[in-house]
Length: 351
Length: 68
Length: 219
Image (tube, chains in turn green, cyan, orange):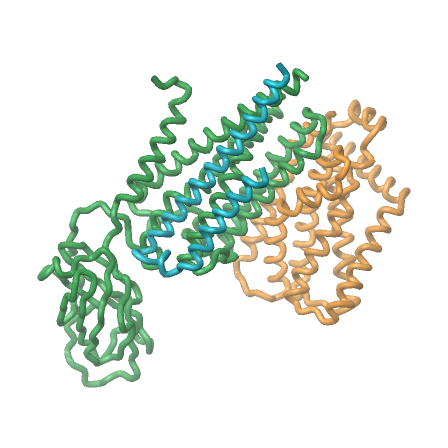
């Protein structure tokens, strides 16, 4: 049915279809959306209302457990739990008179565990204030949260500001990876051109560069929409955004260079040389500079890619196929572009 | 060509302005509509690219036809 | 040894040509002086962090103007004679060394004029001299190589600016960061790491330029 040389195109499309289905259908893990109020004092009986996401508080019934945990590992269990509905629940904690840390304001993590939902964590959920230490304090019942239940469902992790947009990891991020692969292939063909002088390699380099720029623009646009709804602005002057714009400028200059030479052979040679030189400045640009400054993107401060906290095993099962799928799709687009350029060149040669 | 570019540009702008005007809508149900928006942008972008190639080929075909 | 001999010969040629046609070099000097004068006329008092950025931006523009003509002379019949005689890497190395020296002199001139018109915010002079050298070298490699690319086109000066400004960004970001350290604007212990990255970028670009130049040189 399918010709041998076209298998990669179809596998690219099948991978993207898989990514769209899996990326949209797998539910988000239940999580804690908000806690009201989010502050309290030492020694008081603290009543809070928890709003969950994808949770089943009513259904969980007696298996519900909740803790407040300090950074040093000490934790207290909730004294009373009342589920209002599936998404809302009232919790009561008796905060000890002497908080376990030495600072005046201490952030505590809220943990909720149930058989229906598994474990949900909200770091820095509540800020507790300790004005002065009480000397004769009561015995505090410190507990160790443990024995977490696992409901065995396949889920994507819940991150508070991301919510469902964590799925964009499969539709926005692969565009960057695809862009880099396309630029890499453009460089490989530029090198081929300089070594062999084959005019087709030059056209291939041009086609790959065009598709790479297209992917970069798509990445910028989709990233802007995502950023607006999570970080609060379309453009955050984040170092990675800026570096991508620079990369696009570099390759836009490639086309200006192409346009300014008449002689096709001279043009091909100069553009191949510029393409290789430009790619070698991209390496420090994309992998070295972002390490030096803070970034809103994950993996800043030492790691250019995703860390293990940003991508769990379930996400990997979708993310890696997404990268491969979008890259193959990009190759397909470039091959169309290349075939058009080749036809045009043939025609020019005939004329 | 310019009319076509305008349509693409307008559709991008309308998605963005819709998202800006209905920030509450975009952020309801765990911000799922942001994902919808991103996929819509992707689809429009790829369609745009395909139409570009399509138009170039049509032009090319017409040239060849007129030569004959 | 023979390589060095050729490079020195070519270097001597560059200097001789520059001194014989003094109009180009004096044009650049005048450009520097008038830019600095305009800057001080409009700013009056310059804060150290503005000084830091301004210094490198001015050097960037001076570099573009000084380097456009690197390969303009290498046209016509004389070049045909060169092709048969010379190794292209020697030509490029000589040009890079000459342009580095020229930029070093120009950057010292800019610095001197800044001190003359205002005051001197540079606290760590040794470090600043070091990055002046590294910066001049990086600029010189990038601009010389790109000038050789655009020499054949007929609008080379605009083209050079368009091509080089995005490419120079990694270098100039590192330069501004390290020189902020030399001005004591930031306290950062990782300055040696930054220097190492800058040296690595410079050497990477220089290596790539040397590899690619033979392909552009032979017409």
